[in-house]
Image 1 (tube, rainbow, N blue to C red):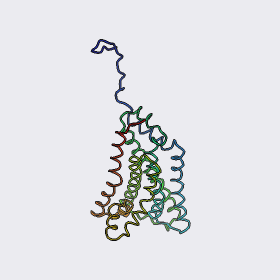
Image 2: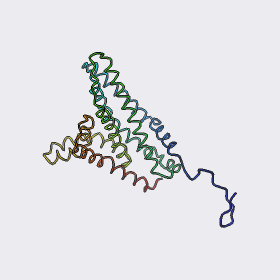
Image 3: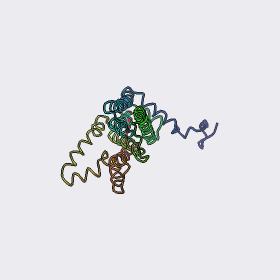
Image 4: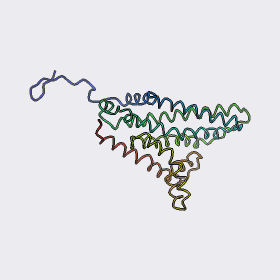
Length: 257
């Protein structure tokens, strides 16, 4: 027992009580949340099944035996669904009205979305590796006709692209905290930028610098130039970094009820 300056005895603070929830534990909780809800569980299953179906379907229907081409086929599904996973990861606390409980248990609010980001990115990498494994198996089935030619930088760029599109969903979800609105923006933006690119020189320039789907092409083809790198950084700043920073500020300042 210790005594305060006012003379009133108080109990000693338990060791480690002021440190809060360890980030490792918080990360495990947020990772488990990715599969706790029915929506996230179904989406995760669809990610895996659809990627597998696209790869196997193309291999069987066309006789395609090039590993990187089949991996690109899997990217069609991942590029659409991974941003949705990012959105649902960030908006879950608000749509299920668990934010008050979460921030009561962990008052340092910034750590919660940070853990969500790490968990979602790890899930994106895991799903990408599964897709690459399926593409490798589909290629191996072709035996001697298989083409394993692949640039290691292109492979890393492929995974990095999946991380970036997931980051876009995370950023919009954290900023808007409204799953339907953020999902619509993620799904519609490629079509909008495709339309903008047809509006003359100005529209084409805007799309070349701000369309994340276009600026990541150089990552996947491993032929990125200095200009391509600046364009990618610009689009990532516009669609990931700035919305994510604004979302963190909003979470820190919002009165949670």
